[in-house]
Image 1 (tube, rainbow, N blue to C red):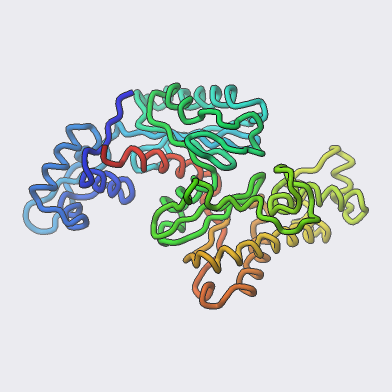
Image 2 (cartoon, rainbow, N blue to C red):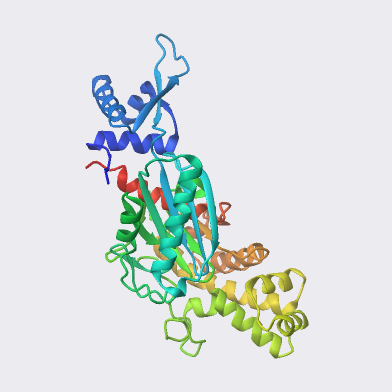
Amino acid sequence: MTLVRPENPQQARLVRLLRDDGPRSRVELGDILGLSRSTLTTELDRLVARGLVETAGQAASRGGRRSSLLRLAGRVRFASVVVAADRISVALTDGELNVLAETGEPADVRGGPEPVIARAVELVEKLRAELGVAELTGVGIALPGPVDGGASVAPAVLPGWQRFPVRDAFATELGCPALVDNDANVLALGEQHAGIGRTFDDFLYLKLGTAIGCGLVLSGSLYRGATSSAGDIAHLPLGEDGPVCACGEFGCLEAYCGDAGLIRAASAAARGGRSELLAARLAETGTLTVPDIASAATAGDPAAQALVRDAARRVGRVLVGLVSFFNPGIVVIGGAPDGLGHILLSEIRGVVYRRSAPLATGTMPVVLSDLADRAALVGAARLASDHVFTSG
C-alpha cells in the first residue's frame, strides 16, 4: 500500500483544519494557523503535489486580490466498519468525513472473526465499486469491548476473537492503513466531529445497548488510558448478589442494564404475572427482545416502565461517580432503544443532578445523541484520519 500523509506538523495542522472545518481560503488558513505567507504557500503547494489538497475555486473577496479556496482532495476516501453484537455496518466518507454511502446487514459475530471480516470487506468493496473509488486512504474499525494493539481483548461479546489481528486483516484486504478501537471510543470521536460534542473540549459519551461503554474526551482529545482501557465501565460492580454477567462475575453494570439484563428482567416480569403485555408476547414468540420491552413501556405497561427506570437509575449512579471524577462539560448518551430514550434520560438526569455536586452539574447538560448509528460510522473514519493526517 502507498501511504500518502503530511510530511511535517504544519502540513498535518492544515489537513486536519480542512477536514474539520471544510474548504478555507489561503488567507483564512494563514490567519488561523499563524503561518507566514511564504511558509503557507510552500506547505500547501506540497500538499497539492502529494494529492492531499486541491483548489476549489476562488474565495469570497476580502478586498484586493481574491484568495484561492482550498479543500481536501477528492481522492481522499475513508472506509468505516462497525461490528456490533448482531450486525455489521460499513460506509465510505470523503476527506471531511461526510458519509457518501453506507450499508449493513445482520451478522453472527459468534462464528469468529474470519467470516465477519470477509463479509465486511465485501461490503466495503461493493461501495467502492458503486462510487468508483480506486483507492482508500484508510479504514477505521469499531469493535464492542476492549481493544489493544489492533486486536479484541477479553471480548465477552465476541467469543473467538481473542487477540485476532483485526487491524492487520483489514489493512491487508483493503490495501490501506487500518485502525481499530472499541465502539465507545469510536462513538465519542463521531460525536466530537459531527455531533453536540463538537462544541465541548471535555465530555463523556455513554453507550448503552448489548455492550455498555464510555468514551472520554478530555481537553479536546480522546483519552484511552495507560493500557487503552479507559471508559471500560461495563463490569463495574453494583452488587455482589446481582445477576450473573457474561464476564462470569455477578452484579456488573452490564448485567443489570445491558440488553441481556433488560430482557432477563422482562422475562421474569412476564413469567411472574406482573405484565400481561410481556407475558402475551413471550407466549407468542417464546422469547423477548428489547423492542418488545420498549413497545410495552410506551404502551403504558407498569412493569416494563419500572424495569426500564430501575436500569436507568443504576446507570445514573455510575454516572454520578464519573461526573464527580472527570467534571465533563456535557454527558452524551447513545444507544438508547427506540421508544425508551426519553424515559431513560429522565431517570438518569434525575439521579445525576440530585446526587452530584452542584459545582459539577450546574451547567452540565445530559442529552441524547442525535447522530444515532451515524456517530459510529463517522467516528471510525475519524479514527483512521487521525492516523493518516499526522506527519510522517
